[in-house]
Length: 274
Image (cartoon, rainbow, N blue to C red; front, side):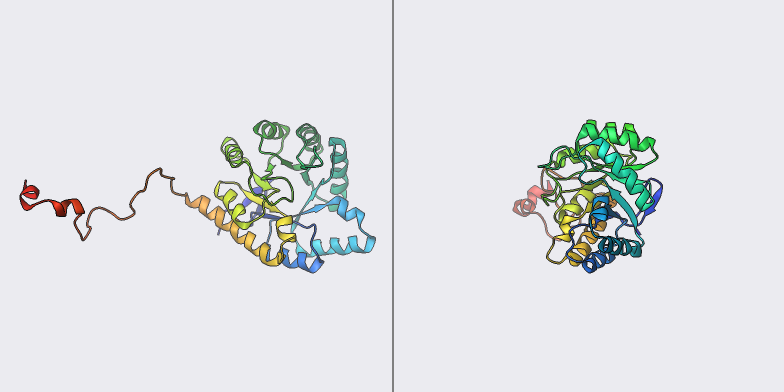
C-alpha cells in the first residue's frame, strides 16, 4: 500500500485529482471517476450555477453519489475580488472550506495573475479557507503563497488544456527541491500518462487532470491509465531511482567470470607467471 497523501489534515490513498468538466455525458464522467479512484473531484461554481435547474441538480446528485471529497474552484475569475466572492459562494453551496484558487492574469495563456493570486490567498486564509492555489513554478510567487498560509501549492506543467506536458522541467524540479516539505500537486498541461508518471518520479505529491481524460477518445480507459501512471511514478520515487552515469557501467561483475579477458588470452605463459 502506498503512503497516503495528506492535504490540510485529510488523508487520501489516491494521489490523483480529477476534474469534472467537458465530459460528453454524465455516465462517462461517472465511469471515469470509478476507474480513476481520485482523492478529490474539482468542480466549478460557474458550471453549477450556469446550467438549468434540472441539469444542475442532476450533476450535483452525481457528485454526491461518488462520495468523493469535492474541491470547488474559482475558475474564470480575473481579479482577487471576484475570486474571493466566488470562493465564499462555493463554501456556502458545497459546505467545505477547501477551495482551489484561480485568478487568471492572461486570457490567452490562462496564466495565473501572481499579484491577484497572493492578494486573494491572504484574504481567504484569514476567512478560514483551506486554499490550494493554481500557480506557476516561479519560486518567488510560491514562497509568497506559502507566507500567506497556503499549505498546498498547485503549479502548472503547461497552460491549461494544452496537454504539452512539463514545459519547464528544471523549474519544476528546482521548486520541488526548494520546497521539500509542502505538498505540490501538478495542475494543468499534463496530456499523457507518461508525463504524469514523470512528475511523480520527480517527487511531486499528486497530479490534477481534466482535459487529458475528458477529451480522450476513451475517457474511461484514459482515466485508468493515468491512475496507474500516478501510482507507478510514486512507487519509483519511493524506490529511489539509480544515479544517472556519464559513462557505461557494466552490470556483469568482473569477479568469477567463466572466460578470461581478451588481454589475458593474448599474453604468453611466461608473461602471466611473471
